[in-house]
Image (cartoon, one colour):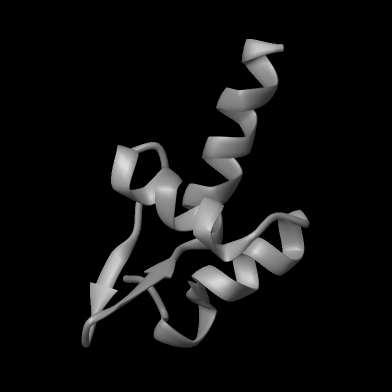
Length: 60
């Protein structure tokens, strides 16, 4: 089970990756990032973020 205190906001992900929050939201809307909707906001599981980064690394 996912622990809610381990989930990250779009803002936190953007800050960690050095991109704008809008970019994170765009990736979510495209289906490239998996997000969990909670109370009208989206949260990201660090494990899913790591999987995304690994997929991106394979493309380069």
